Image 1 (cartoon, helix red, strand yellow):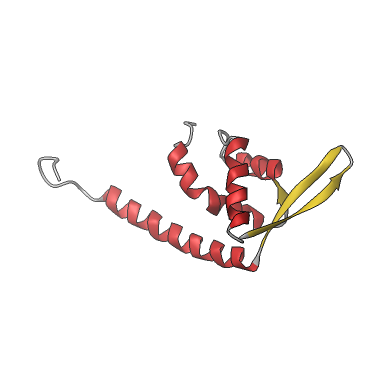
Image 2: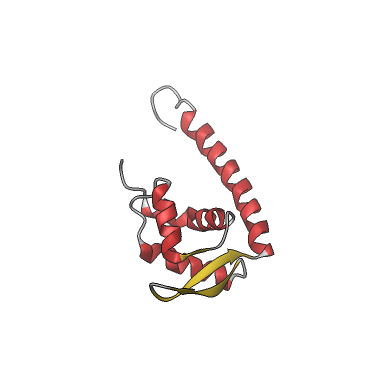
Length: 115
């Protein structure tokens, strides 16, 4: 499968992270693993961590440390009430965008192939 367009992925990363975290607390690499499992094989860890920082700084996530038996404590993230509201808004916006793109890309070009 071809790699995802990095610019498109950057645009939906917040939605993806909020969506995965809506199912429960998770840590950075756990989120990377989950997203790779769902088809984002080319997702780089270096993309996820800044996204988490942005969401946390915006008040959409909160974090807490959890001890690990196999190394240092892990920073786990969870949605805040504002994060749940933002997820709902982003899902709605995404559905509208997808529908608009489908409409635009399935529309026939005028005769002669020019717009």
